[in-house]
View 1 (spheres, rainbow, N blue to C red):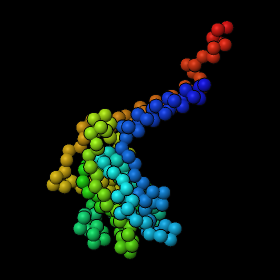
View 2 (view 1 turned 90 degrees about the vertical axis):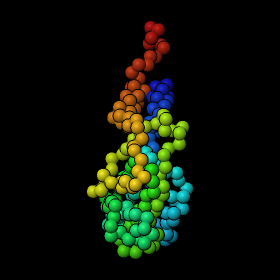
View 3 (view 1 turned 60 degrees about the vertical axis):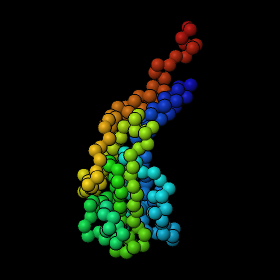
View 4 (view 1 turned 30 degrees about the vertical axis):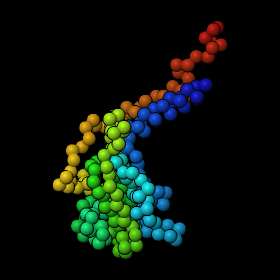
Length: 197
């Protein structure tokens, strides 16, 4: 009984936590950011076309940093596979990029031959749909890499951040821990036999 109660509290809490958080996109899915997986080139254009990117979403690049990196470039440099003037350079092997503004994002691998072999991805982040933006706040995961302050360079048509701010992540995590602790330990629950005696 206590386990069922804690499970319901956990699911309820996670439901509301999920509503307040943007989508997390793992570039390349479980294969990650690489040139070749299982002998076949990954199609990042197809990967990006099957997703909707919104302000508040998080894009995560997972890769072996001995053989890959992530470079944010302009549209022109994306098309030319040119990383000589990067907007941002990431090389941790696990880079988290918060989509803070609407607009186009262009990423390539700058190591020789990687971009030309297809290791590049681009997508457009739009404002969240109205049914989400009125009730959800944006939660930003910690950024990574030396270029963490520049996930998106401001353009001439840059929009202001969405008002509302992020909910207190520590508060939500604390509630989850308390809910699980109460459910597992049985604090606050009564056995009807002991109660009647």
